[in-house]
Amino acid sequence: MKAYCVKCRASREIKNPRALTMKNGKPATQGVCPVCGTKMFRIGKN
Image 1 (spheres, one colour):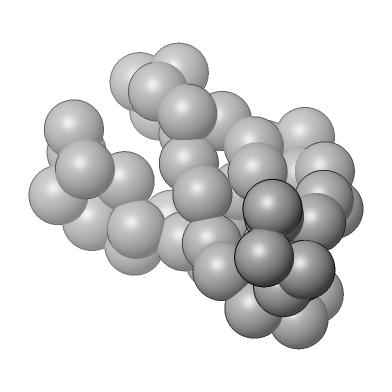
Image 2 (image 1 turned 180 degrees about the vertical axis):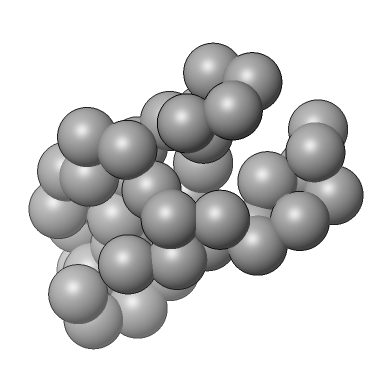
């Protein structure tokens, strides 16, 4: 799954993706950028 890395300013594949549910009940995915190691977050179905 791809997400936007704010630090690299590019869309990259998420490393170690983890599915989670936000407070409002919507699904999301969290992981880290494979290049710089910054947290990445994507809202929506996996």
